Every structure is written in structure tokens, then in C-alpha cells.
Image (cartoon, rainbow, N blue to C red):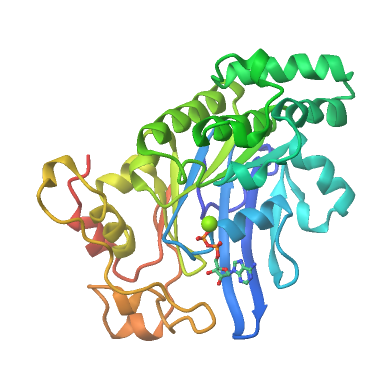
Length: 344
Ligand code: ADP
Ligand code: MG
């Protein structure tokens, strides 16, 4: 299970795979201090998928970069919090040990494979390198594993194409190659940051299906970052909704779809195109996300919120416990929850 608000488990329970606690990240820029991540906590267990959802600029990628240890520092800086992986706090780990963890135990799939892959190395050599560096295989053995892996992620004629370069593949095939590399060493945790956003809609579904299938087969813990609520319903167990660097709602996927407990989540759900709403225009959420150098006082969402009242402009809502699996950072979560959505 992957809740954002659960307290520490009993001393006998195994530590969760990933346990992010009260993480704060700032960027020191010429325009001031951008508060990109403002107290994010979430957990991911082995074999489970946590979807992280929110508009562009809400801090999804920065949180992921902090977990992976690839934050752009400076200008970025983790000012407080813990990131525990199998119970060990990664933020106090020497860089050398973190580097060993990356690739072998935790890996990332990016939105844009073309910039993530090395343009001057064949895809086969890039995959094979995972096995020579981390597993000490011979070049020949590693090559063979690369071909197998390319077959496994559905690349036709893998034995021939293993010698080709990234630019010789279509966007969808490149994304499959990046997934192959991320999963090559069967890491316990994969973070996929908008892995299908750059692809055509039909290809998006195939790539997402592949990722979900491999995740299940390998029992990987998966953090799936997306701004597309449509794709998460089928693949995620739990959702964390982010706004202005905070988690504003955390819930099992189906509970959240049935009835959101935060007006921002409701607005996101209402912005999904639905078959039964054909002909109605798709409405985006009115207003803009806040400037992170000047986040509004009280609830950061209040300037855009249809339910906002005086208290919302002054008091920052904590993540209220809706039930043991759910939290909402809305003073009026009860009202919001009762509204439902009809998304079954
Ligand atoms: P998203 O939710 O779209 O993934 P990000 O986590 O990438 O958002 O970014 C959150 C905010 O962090 C950005 O809006 C920006 O203010 C700040 N930020 C991210 N990366 C940088 C950077 N390299 N330099 C300065 N600010 C950054
Ligand atoms: Mg992002």
C-alpha cells in the first residue's frame, strides 16, 4: 500500500520500499526563492504503483529528482526531509553509494528518450553497458542480454536493430528501449516521469501497457508521474495529487475517482474528456498555478477554488485524515467528498 499520510509502522514490520518524509526543495533563482516542494510525504511498497498527478510546475519531477539523487544542485537544494529506501536515508548516503543504487536498485524512465539516450552509441551498446558495468558480464554475454531485453519490450527484429542508434527508432520504440534499460537490472523501484507524454495517443496506450506489464512481472515498486488522469485508473493503486509543491490529496485510485476529497482533484477529474460528454467543450481549470516564489497564504489553491471561504485565505490546511488510506488538504473535504463525480 502506498499512503502519503500513514505514521511509521511497528518496529517489526519491514521498512517500506520508498518512504519520502516531509521533503522540502527550493530553487534559488534571480527572481527569488522558488518553493518547488513544500513538505511532500509518500510511500511506495514493493510491487505497487503510486501515480503522482498535478499540473505542470507542481513539483512532481523535482520530487522524483530528489529521490533519484539527480537534482540540479545548485540552483536546487533539499532544505529538509528524509528519503528512505529500504529504511536507509538516502540523503545521508555518500554519493558513491547512491550512484551504485541508481540503475541497479532504482531507475528512472524519462519523458524524452531522445535526450536521455546517448546519440553516438548504438542502443545495444547502451543496454549492454548496464550488464558489463553492474553485473561484470563479458561484452558478448551482455550483447546477448541486450537482444533478449529488446525482444521482451516488443522491438521487432531486435537482433538486427541492436546495432542501430537512437535516432533510427520511432518515438514509441525509443521509449521501449528506455524502459528496457530502466528494468534491465530488475531494480526494486522505477520512477517513470511522464513516460508517454511525447507519444501519439495510440502508441501511448501500448507503451503504458508494456510498463504496467513489466512492473507486475518484476514486482517493481513504481512511481508514475503524469498529468493525465485518464491513464492512471488502469495501472495505479494509489494516487497522490500535487499542487504548488504539496500533496493535496492522497487516496486509493478508485476511491478518488468515485469521489474526490479535494476541489482541485475534482477540477482535474472534470477536465478529462469523457465519451458521455461528447459535444461539450473540454474545460481546463480556470486560473493559473501560483508563482512558486510567492505562494498565496492559507490554501495555495484558494484563488482558483469555487469553495474558498475566509479561512482558506488565512489558514493552511494540513493533510486531514479522511480515513486510514486517504488524506485531503482541504478545510472542506467533507463537503467535497459528498459532492461525488459520477466517475465510476
Ligand atoms: P512538474 O510538476 O511539472 O514536474 P517540476 O517539479 O519540474 O514540475 O518543477 C516545479 C518547479 O520547480 C518549477 O515550476 C520551477 O519553479 C522549479 N524548478 C524546477 N527545476 C528548476 C531549475 N532547474 N531551475 C530553477 N527552477 C526550477
Ligand atoms: Mg515534470
